[in-house]
Image 1: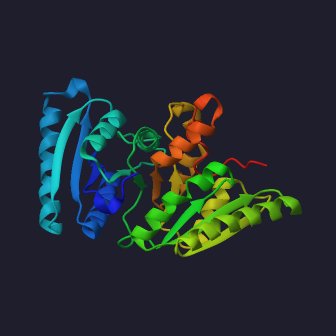
Image 2 (image 1 turned 180 degrees about the horizontal axis):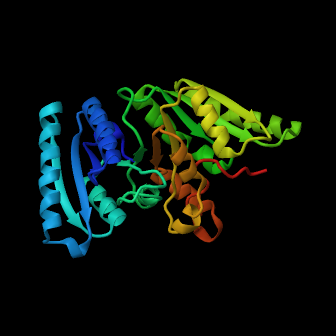
Amino acid sequence: MKDIRACEAILVPVDFTDVSDYALDHAMALATMFNFRVYLLHVISKRQKGSEKEKQAEESLGRIASRLKNEHGLRVTQRVMDGNVFDTINGVADHLGASFIVMGVHGKKGIQHLTGSYPYKVACRTHVPVLVVKDKHRHVGFRNIVVPVDFSKRSAQKITQAIRFSKVFGATVRVFGFLSSENKAKIINKEALLKSVNDIFKENNVPVTTHLMVNPDYNWPEALLVFGEQVDADLFMIVAERGGRIQDIFSPNKTERILDKTDVPVLTVMPCAEDLAAEAASANKGLITPFVDPLGLIVKE
């Protein structure tokens, strides 16, 4: 993965709703911090190409771009394109070499383009970190990044990504694990694994805390949200893996349930090329399991 300090663009899909305004709010904060340019993208269907709908979208997007330029003094570019929503977003992100995709997401009652699992479908198909937001940012940058782990080897392999981002944002990493079982042997094992993750962050001079929640009355989503409130989390960080089994992941999906219940942004990053190569070498017949439990929602006993 590219060093995000060296990249230049933030891509913001815009559907002219409140949540895309929130995405713009986060994007402008990041762009101001790193002096990135901002690229606004609105996707229409192929049948709307050349229609009044396209013209109206171009005018609306132009007004937004002008306002952002005047308010923030940053480079802002806009474009209306036709096609499939998440394929178009990913294609533009790759073309730009974008640093981030910042996307707003609607709740379950939303009816616009970016409803449901679209942000995560984008995350599964892109090389670009995807920041999914539901509300305005509270401050510039992030101070408490929660990294849920499922204690698998693959989780440990991806810690390098959390290290990179925590250093960029000057954040404290809150490593979190959960058990619904009160079995002492399992607890001791999980605590030892958490300590090993903690040590990795410390060796890289990243401020870190670790916490194992043991509560038979909670499930993973509930436990994660409770912990996020306890530490005043302003970012949940997960690591996606490229793959095609989108519907298997998202219907039904605990990650989306978490997103539906929290206003905390979720950052999804792809594993770096070295990690992908290592997994390909060790996986059976060279296959990489798609999207291996990125939020640590599946307890592997």
